[in-house]
Image (cartoon, rainbow, N blue to C red; front, side):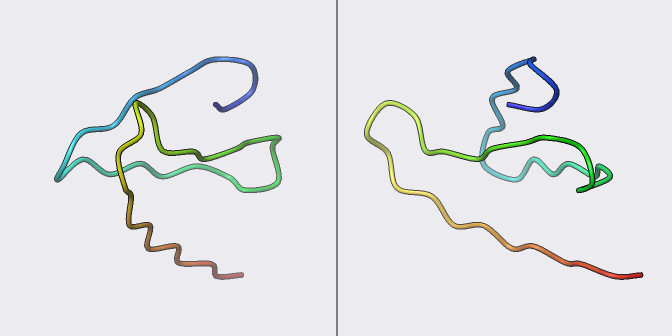
Length: 41
């Protein structure tokens, strides 16, 4: 969820956003998830 809107990403999808905004990442439907986060200034 990003700024109140839900996005469901599938295998191979990616997303870029300003992490200064409210956000949360969770696995859905009981599936496992791998997350790679890259933070830079």
